[in-house]
Image 1 (cartoon, rainbow, N blue to C red):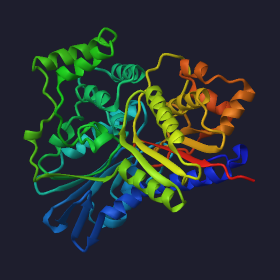
Image 2: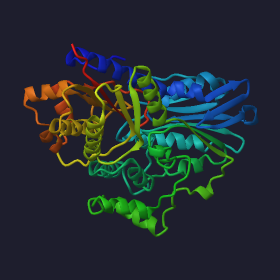
Image 3: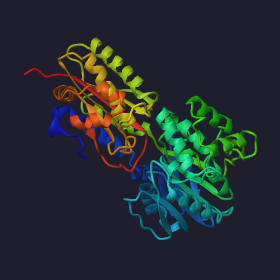
Length: 464
C-alpha cells in the first residue's frame, strides 16, 4: 500500500520505514486474517481461540445456525467466516457500506450508513429483530461485531426520532465526549443497544466474535453492546448531557425518555445478572494491541528501538500532542551522539472539542498540534524525524483522510506557504492545513477498525 507521498516530501528512508511499519500493523488486524487466526474447523467441531481463551463448539448440537455481521468490518469478517462455516449457516444478515457488494447463499446483504444513521439504519434494526424472533433454544447465533454498528443499526425509544438522536450525537461529538460517553447516551435512547438485542436472541446460544475499537476492549462500549450487558443507567446518560452543558439543548423527546427512564417507567438496559454466561460467549479476536505489537516488531526488524507509550491513549488531542512534544524533547536531550533510531508507538482514541468552523479529525488535530509544538521548540538540527497519526479504519472524523504526517520538510513547506498551525487549530481546520502542505494520509476505508495508531520515528542524520 503506497499511500505516503515519498515523491513529494523526500525523507525517503523514514517514509519507507513508516509505511512498512504501518502496513504490517494494518494487515495484522485485517478482519479476514483475524477470523482465520481465531477459528479452526474440523468436520463438526469448531475451535475458537482469542486472548488466551479457547473453546470447542460441537456444531451438531444445534438445530439451526445463524450469522449476523455488524460494524465497519462486517463484510470482511463475514466472508472469511463463511468460507469456514458457510455450509452450516441456515440464515444470516451482513451489513455493508454502499460501495461493498456481498453475495452468499441464504445471507441477506443490508446496506448500512456511517458515521450518522439514516432510514437504512432503521431498516437494519427491523430486519435483525425479525430474525431474532425466529430463534429457539437449540439454535446457535454467531454475531460478528466491529465498531461502527452503533450508527448502522438504530431503533430509537419512542418518541425519540432519528433526527433527534442524530442531533444529540453530533452535539456530544463536537463537545468532546469520548466513545464510552457517546454510547451510554445511545444505549438509553435505543431499543436494540445495551444488551437489548441479545435479550431478543436469548433463547439461543450466542457467540460474539469481536474486533474491538475501544480502550480496554470494554464489551459494554463496542458497538454500544447490543448483545452483552450494560452497567450504565438512565441517570448516568443524563449526567453526561449535563457534563457537556447539553441538557437544555437536547430535543424534548430525549429529555422525556431519560426522565421517564430515571423514574423506572422505561426498562433499563440489560444487566449482567440477567445474562446466562453459559449461553453467551464473547471473544475479542482483534484490537489495537495486535496492531501496535506488530508495528513494534516490524520497527525492530528495520533497526529501530521501539517504545510502546500506551495502548489506551485518550484525552483532548491538543493536550496529548503537548505531552508528546515534551516527551520527545526530553528524550532528544538525553540521547547519546550515536543512538539507535527510535520508534515511539501508541494506540487509543483521542477527542476534539470543536470550537471552530473548519474540518478535521482527531488524528489530524493531534498531528497539527504536535507540529505547532515542535516548531516552537525545534529538535536538534542533527536529528531527523517523522511522525504520523491515523485512524485504522481509514476515516478520521467527517473527512476523506485517515490522518496526517509531519516532518521537518512539512515544517519547511508550511513556512514557505506562510501557514500558521495555530490559526488552523483555532478553527479546527486541520484538514485544510495538511491538504495545503500535501501531507494528508488517504487510504480509503481499510475494512478494519481498532482505534487510532500513532508513530514517531527519530534518528541522527548521517554525515556526508
